[in-house]
Length: 69
Image (cartoon, rainbow, N blue to C red):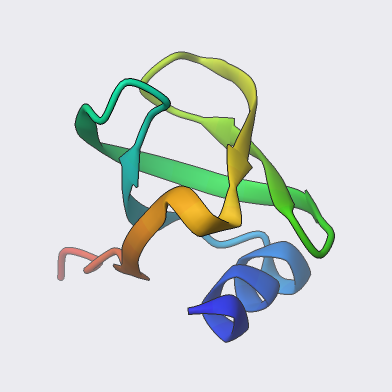
């Protein structure tokens, strides 16, 4: 998972994440990572249309976005 986050940071590609917020609610987000450290990923969230901070421990899964032909 951390490798895909770093790939998004380096290549500026969008990725899909499933994220659990502090209240336990799970959401699906399309993001582009702009910075990452040991605890958080700072990313542009296309759902909220702003830069958001995501705790790495709360990212349940992530994957590439399929490009249409």
